[in-house]
Image (tube, rainbow, N blue to C red; front, top):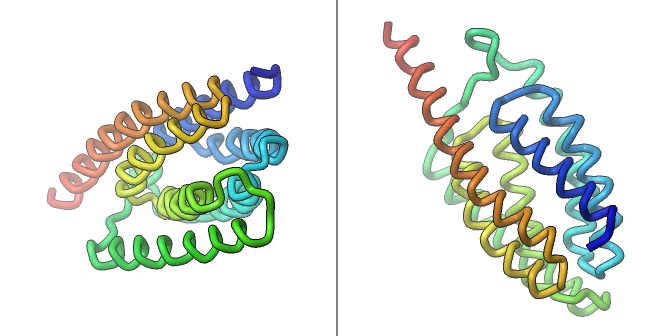
Length: 192
């Protein structure tokens, strides 16, 4: 456990809590987290996660832009629905992309866990995209992804990061609950 990992954990928790609360500052705080974790994962030869953090920087910019331009209700970020068919399509495309990325890491790098790393990276990208689009499905996805991340980080001896991802499971469940309440409130306003 390094001071850099401690800092990354703290800033990551702050970023997720701000995201759950639908606060615009989440994008800036998360940006710092992406940069720090990008460096840390590179040091541990988790190249899928390193690349993921770089892509997260750009998705963060997209998310900030999208959230700032979208409809607001009661001065809060509005939750947007997503069709079940679209969810299934996104999951299939993500799994295929993760497999291709994992095979690339396996054959062309010295990645520690290429297939697992790449699938987690791919589904994390999907989660980040769904977050930027304000879909509740993002929190369900994060629960499952973070459970698997916890095991991977324990295996790689990144114990503090494993604890962080275990706490992300609870935070994702809380986010799911919070966003569901907000969406129910939004739907009541529409009905009235």
